[in-house]
Length: 140
Image (cartoon, rainbow, N blue to C red; front, side, top):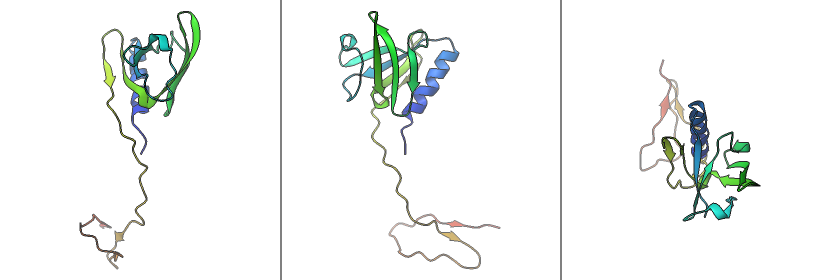
């Protein structure tokens, strides 16, 4: 199962922009592959203004947030993996969302064919399990 974090970031970004608020991104700069201006990192974190007026070519994908921006007048490319995002919030009032540590979610494993019971012939399970699993049946 994929992480919900990039979807929430995109939704909150749009909500903040629609309400004419300035979206700020709090980033854990100690996470691997984070590319941000090191001179602005404090206590392992950096806060980035990601308003459309402050950045160019903003892309919030499922893997990372990328854009270019000027820091001290010098253009720089920024790369923030979504796992490094600590929060997205409005500069003006602090409304938004903070994210906790999200464990890697494994892809669901296929569990074999789904058993469906019909009136004419009940489905026989190949192997009985200790815990009773839910089953499906057709109701007419």
